[in-house]
Structures are given as C-alpha cells and as structure tokens.
Length: 480
Image 1 (cartoon, helix red, strand yellow):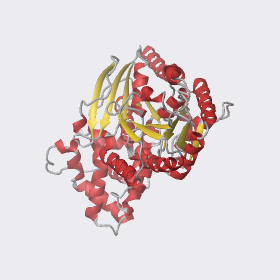
Image 2 (cartoon, one colour):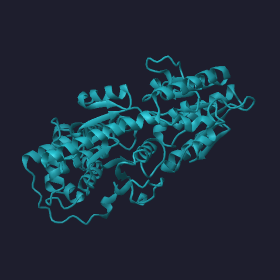
Image 3 (cartoon, helix red, strand yellow):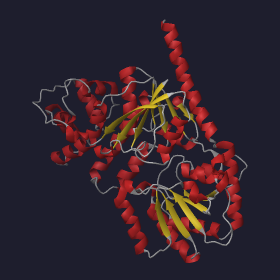
Image 4 (cartoon, helix red, strand yellow):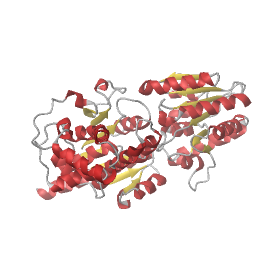
C-alpha cells in the first residue's frame, strides 16, 4: 500500500519529536511504500533534509508557505462568486456557520482563480471581507483588516492549490495546514484519511497568539478562530483520529471531533537500545541535569535556565546540558544565552544536535519545561534509560511519570508550567537523594517496558494500516 504522510514544520527538515516519530514509523513498516508531503516555512529549506530517507520512501513532495513570492502578477479581475461561495469564505473568516470545505476546495482549485494573490486582490474577496468588518470589526480600519487577513490566508490558499500526490491512504500527523491537505486529498481522490494528533495544534496556536506581540489585541480572536477552523476541516473529513493518551482525546471531543472516530495508540521506545546507559551514573561526580530538546519558545528553555539558577544556589556543583539543535530559531537561542549571562549562572552547556545516548549515561535527572507537548519522546527515552524526570504538567507527562492505575510508582516529579521556582525545588529534592533518583528511575523503566514499547507502537499502526488495506482489497474484489 502507498501511504502519504503529511507533515507540517517537521520531517524531514528537523530532528526529534514528531520527526523522529515519522522516521521510526516509516522505517519499521517496510511492507508499505511512503510518500512524504512536507510543508515547510521557506523555500530555502528545499532539499535540506536532516535524515537519510529509507528505501520505502518513494517520493518527497515539498510545499513552502512563502512560495507566493514566486507567483505571477495578478491579471484582470473577472472572478465572481456564488452566494454559497460567499458564505463559505465568510465562515472561514469567523462567520457563524460551519465551513463548506469541499466547496472551498473546488473554488480555490478551479480555473476561475488564477493565483492566491489574485484571489486576495479580487473584488469578490473585498466584498466578503467588508461584510465581516461590518459584523465584528466596524471600528478597525479596513486596510489593517485586509493585511491581517491576507497574511493569515495566503499559506492556506497556497497549500490548497498545490498538486497532491496520489496514494492509497493519507495520514496527517497534525491538524493545521497538514490536516487541511489530508481533507483535500480525501475530497479529490476519495481515499481514506487518517489523522494522528501528537499535541493539540489549535490549542498550541491559541497559546502562541495570546502571548504574541505581533498580533494586535483586537485581531487575536480572529487568528484563534481561524486555526480552530483549520482543525475543523481535519476532524470533519478524517476517517479516523489517533491520539496518544486520554487527556488529548477529551480535548479533541471538547473542540468538535466526533468521539466515535478517536482511538489511542501511545508512542513507544525500544527499551533495549538504552540498556547500556540505564541507571544512575557512578557516585562522586557533580549532579548533571539534561534536557533533550529543540531550542524553540514552545519548549520554554528560559524557565529551565531560571530554575537552574536557583538550583545552583543550593547545589553549586550541578551542571545543565541542553541537548538539541538551536538553528531553528536563532533569535530565541541568543535570548537564552543572554538570560544565562544576565543571571550570571555558570555550567550550562548547549551541545547542539548530538547522539543523545552518548550523554544519557552520565546524566542524573532529565528536565522538560515545555509549555505544550503531546507524548514527549525525551521523557520516554529517559524512562527507558532509568533516569528520573522533572517536567511541566503538559501533554501526557503526568500519565508517563505518575502512571494511570499501574503499580510502578512515580518516575519523576511534575510541576506547573512556567513555575521555575517549583521546578527548582523538585530538582533540588531529587538532587539531594540518590536513593530517590534510583527508585524513580527503576519505576520509569518498568513503566516503559510494560506500556510504552516500540513494538506496541508499531503494531498499533501496522494493524491500523492493515484494516484500510483489507478494506481497499474488499472494494476491489467487489467491483470485479
């Protein structure tokens, strides 16, 4: 079976997290062919893959959200919309009705629309936008509204107008633009569409927009509604939604996904890969803390640095190793370096991208300070290596570290998001007790061996894909 994996802002351009998940899934299922439909931010990423692609990836289709820069100049405006198309476009911009996604797909891919830029300069689009202004933004200058909506919609229009590779099954690993592409493929080709949600995309975008200073306060709600509309496309048109843990399932239902579509397949880790680095390091050295993480704002490295500054006051021999790439957001990386310098905290090492297992053996505690997560691979790796964790209360971290009805005991300590003082207290508590660290490390290893193995993860998806393959075979035999 040929499966099209649709990924936004991840594989194969960056490592870790969802990218590692995709690579593990594809390499573990050689019986299938895969097409990767990769949505990147900028054309300069083209071909800059961080992975050696396995042989069963037969095609990589790249879409870049800034490709409108290459579009031809708008031609004469002859576009006319039907009342239904007006309604569909208005609902995408926050109108009260559900979005008619099939109708929008047909309109935006038709020969009536010459380009994304031409569409946004058309008289008909101005009519739709004027009506939205009159309804909810009558005190906002129209030009300000127009440029806001233009920046919002250009990436969506570009993705919808792209050629979509043919496959037997489409599998998006998030909602957002990737989810819209999955819904589009279902509409164009009538093939099954599967969605896996690691984190809740729309909630993550909402958190970012609330904190963002590049969005005017009166437009924040417009942006937030827009991302929920994108999720609506995926939830409405997907055949099945797979999530990683129970709390994610509850949130998906809350924001509009049909609960009958949702099943749970947790992530997994190959525990045997970590046997050589498992357990506490030898006694006598400094307390070494580690974070397996990309240096980006959603991982909230600044909170980690602030907590480490407090730890150093109580445990001055401690060290912090931040293991992960920083190139994705160089400005944020510089801000983290400046914060450490301002706080005059020593012994923080940014390693860049490294082989994590080479460092795990010497680490005593693994940290995660994220604002949002799904089921973080970093925590699973720590558990497989028998290392205790201190994490924020995001995603499945509480379930991973404290269990969900099992008898393995706590594998770490969970603290509130952005509370660097509570994170520091948890690190100090663990740092002062080798016995507690070893006990929690053993608990994490047992839980990983029982509930979160790579074999369980892969078999879950193998069975899922097989169900669709058998359905396709049954349909073919019925037709013949």
